[in-house]
Length: 113
Image 1 (tube, helix red, strand yellow):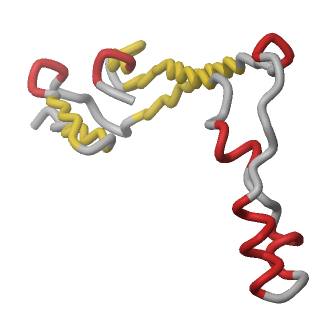
Image 2 (tube, helix red, strand yellow):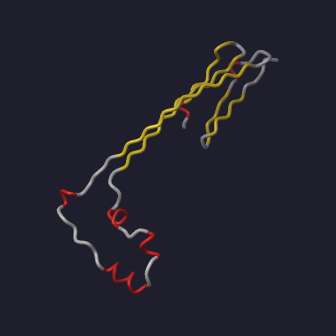
Image 3 (tube, rainbow, N blue to C red):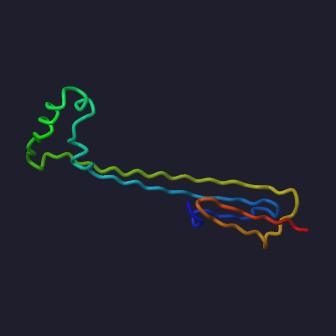
């Protein structure tokens, strides 16, 4: 989240409202061939070392590339939030300051003397 996605406003003279909206997108395509075709952990555990080396050196021949399965994954999460703070005494609205650093928002709200 960044400061462009957050709004700070006064709804009343003594009420501060913070609103925001967050959108995240994740996109994925086909996994690498070594990930899909690699031996499973179960196959790695059975048998002795010699048999394992023989099976590893034999690679299955790839058939027609048109038979390869393809996929596309797109995921999007959207969230909104709103928080209101009511103060017991009058707030100096012109002196309110806010900062955003490392995804943490700090707001300083001075009271009227």
